[in-house]
Image (cartoon, rainbow, N blue to C red; front, side, top):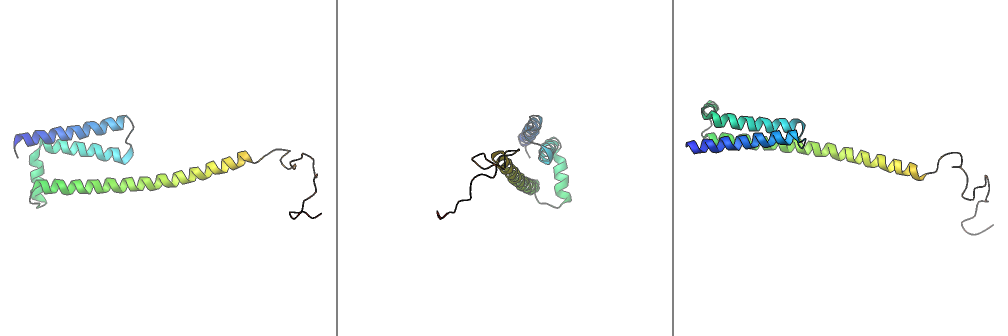
Length: 138
């Protein structure tokens, strides 16, 4: 590979590492995703500084081209990230549903009268008011 290709890899790795650290610092990315992005940036910088390590891994795994190994690793990385995000979405949907049910129960309690006068009919007289026939008969 030409030297300018290594510089491009180094700049790209530093960019990914810097952006991931900044997102973690601002608390936009948390947990396992943050670790994954920081590791990706660190590995990118490492292979940009030591390209012979990538060549050695390529030969050891008997992959024909280093680019094939990088693309395969990238697809695996994105698959893992996608699965992690799908898991997080499912967890958040369950949490949102539970919170919506709790809010509905709280609203129902707020509308329902409570206290010593809760059992009084609308006219305010205990035991008052005769039951009315829905058909209008006495």
